[in-house]
Structures are given as structure tokens and as C-alpha cells.
Length: 394
Image (cartoon, rainbow, N blue to C red; front, side):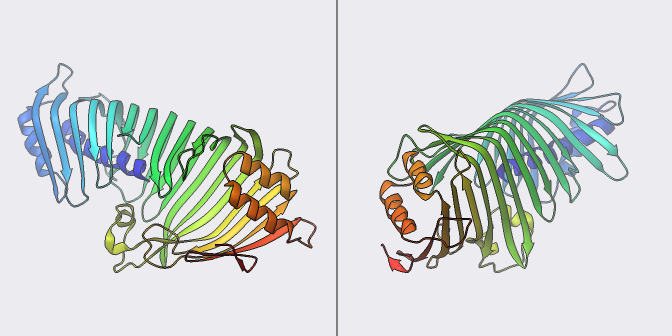
């Protein structure tokens, strides 16, 4: 969601300075243009330009441009941006940005070598789009997006749509239990942004590094193929975030461990004191509450030979960091070829050996009478207390 906001911010800024360029820069001087742009800014915004120079191609070169929107708490600093008009109604302006910094409340991105065009489908309906190519978008010590091609439709309308393709993405983030690194190759993103958010991410390859989680384990690195992630954010009485993840041919350092992994869940916001729009949720506005519950969890995992199965279903309440209430989790585990499936996850480092041993023992002592599974175990968590098949283990 963070990358989606960054593209929208940058596109709106480009549109603010590009539209008056096309209408007046061919016959008037940059000094007039600067005054025109400043008077056209959205409420709560300000624009500072160190220097404006006319180019031989009837364009404008901006130096040290700073755009701030205090209401939405973001800022764009562009070291050098060149805008040049085209003799085209549908593609009126080209732009080039050598480097810049985009800051929001919770992030800072570095932009390198961005080139693109302003596209116009209808001046009357204000139907503007932006297409471009970005060499690198980097969040300091966290994320790197390389060679991105993107198209954003509906820049100044309520409903926006973005598509983006990247050769490689490397994202690092600090989870409650340690550092996580995600690498994706041949990345494709589509997203719709209006009253709701709908996103779809596909990638050819995935590398998930969990080696620094908990006490650390160098073997805890997963590799997968044909990755799919659907993530939505919508208001259904309360704000909800349905998530669906799929991957195939799952491998660890120890070897192949699974042919397919499917995960579904729904995040639930609570404790809102006001009615909030999508942007308020994305901006983590305090009055909008926070993500507290994760329910409808459904994880299905098949081993490499499709002979073994591991399924986990759960509803978790107050399970997020700083939820401010006692966590409660009701869950069940169903397995087929139990010993093989559990031992593979233990060898890969995904499952702690002690916990894995306890879980394996509980499953083997809980046969399932159905034909689809061999064993079935119930796990309940209340605060720090864990019950396995109704008996406390912690």
C-alpha cells in the first residue's frame, strides 16, 4: 500500500506543474508560470522552486523543487526536473527527473532516473494519466524497486488505477520477532484506489528470508514460484483487509518441501472514534482505530509429492502488536502423512524443533476418523496460556 501512495503523490505533483506548462509555457516566461502554479495548488500545499529556466525545446527546467502538502503529511523534493511540451493533444508533456526524495509520515523514498509522459483522454472530463519508467525507487535500508514501468489512470479523479511492472523488488521490514526480507522477480502490480483499495501482485519467483526471526536460523529461507497476492481494503461496517496468497514449488535450503501453499485471512480494524475514508486508514490516522483482529485464517500446504497435507484454520482476536487487549486464538490443525509433513517443516527451520515435537506428538495421539486426514489437533491461546487438545502446554 505504501508504494501505491508514493506513485499517486508523485503523479499529482507532476500534473500540478505540467498542466499550466502546456497551456502557457510556449508563449509566456517561466516567471509567470511559477506564479500560476503557486495559485493552483491544493489547500494546505506549498511549492518552492529554487530556479526555473527555459529549455531550447520550449520546455522548463526546474531546480530544487519542493512540494509539500501539510494536510496529507507528505513532501516531494526534486533536485532537477525537465518538462517539455509535445505537439500532441493526447500526449502533451514529457518529463524527466534525475533524482528526488519522497517523504510521508512513515517512510522516505529515493527516486532515480524517472522518465515519462502526461496522457490526456479528455480535457473536458479532466481524464489525465501518467506513464513512465523508473530506474530505481529505494526506501532507505528497507526496500529497493528496480526498473519499474508504470501507468496511472485517473490522477485527479476519485477513482484511480495503477499498473506497474518491475524486474526485481527487494523489501526489508522489521516484524515483532525480527527482520524479514522479501525478494521478488518479474513483479506485476495492478491496483484500484478510490473509496476502497484493491490490489493484485504477481511474481515469477519469491525468496523469503526468515533467518533472523526469533533466535535465528540460517536454514529458514524459503524459495517459491508463481506467486500471487490479492490484498483489498474496504469498509464493511468496520474496515477490513482480506488477503489471499498463493505460491508453488516451495523449497528451503534443506530441499523441496512443498508443491503448493495457499493462505487466506481477513484483518479487522477496531476502536475507531470517527468515520474514516480510505486515505485516513492508509495514513494510520489514530482516530480511525487500528488493525486488531485477524480472522478467517485458512492455510493449506501440500508436500512435494502431493501425498502429505497440512491445514491450519484459526480466528485470532487482539493478535496484532499493541492491540491493547488480551489475545485469544481458536485454531485447528489437520494433517495427512503427518510425520513426513511435520518433519520437513522442522528440518527447514520453519517450525521450532521443540514446538514441532510437541505438535507432532499431539497430532499422532489425535487420529481423525474422516478419510481426508490422518490426524486433527485443536489449539487454543488465551493470553500467554496455550492449550493443545484442551491440555495446557505453556
